[in-house]
Image 1 (tube, chains in turn yellow, orange):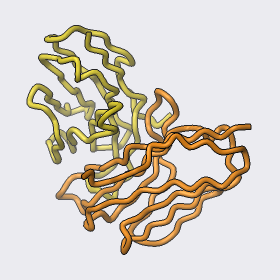
Image 2 (cartoon, rainbow over the protein chains, first blue to last red):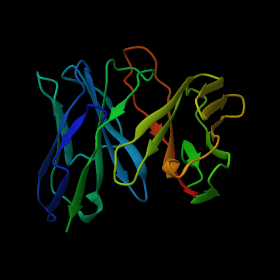
Image 3 (tube, rainbow over the protein chains, first blue to last red):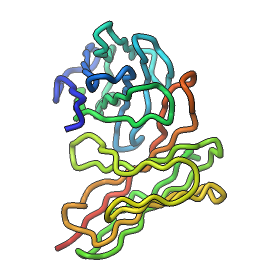
Image 4 (cartoon, rainbow over the protein chains, first blue to last red):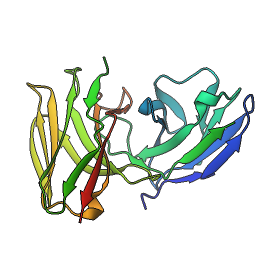
Amino acid sequence: DSGVTQTPKHLITATGQRVTLRCSPRSGDLSVYWYQQSLDQGLQFLIQYYNGEERAKGNILERFSAQQFPDLHSELNLSSLELGDSALYFCASSVGLGGQETQYFGPGTRLLVL
Amino acid sequence: QKEVEQDPGPLSVPEGAIVSLNCTYSNSAFQYFMWYRQYSRKGPELLMYTYSSGNKEDGRFTAQVDKSSKYISLFIRDSQPSDSATYLCAMSANRGNNQGGKLIFGQGTELSVKP
């Protein structure tokens, strides 16, 4: 158990809908990262927050947004969902925010868009 | 061309074999190199972390980084059926506290260790 929690574990929804994925980092970690894992693209970085502020952005679609709250939990919002958004979404956390930090991954949320 | 290339396998070996997993990369700015293990439908778990070039050993696992060749390896000695998983290499170019911690992952190699 990494100490990172994610809810829900599974999510099934329809095209065009909006969903929210939630992540609680390890105690003491200030950085939260979101990654998407699909069969064809592998594990891809989406976005990073550090202590409530956005610090790095990957190839995140405009339909996707995230935020980190004062209690440091984070939410990833996915809207106007398409079939291709079906994937595993992982949250990771670390103490600091640089590339030298060890990132600990949560168990993931499996999203299926029908 | 992807920044990080990794043979997806699958790789099947008998129990007790030495396993070699490899990644190549194109970005010479990468400084931090990791290997993660991912069991089916689970989150990636950090196995090894190496900074810059050199070797690092931890039990049955050895990680090697050759920055001159842009090549990293993970060796597993005396492989066990419990080592059956997908192994992902990951890298980061950013240091310090002002650039973020984006990790670039390889595609992952699926390993099966047969009893």
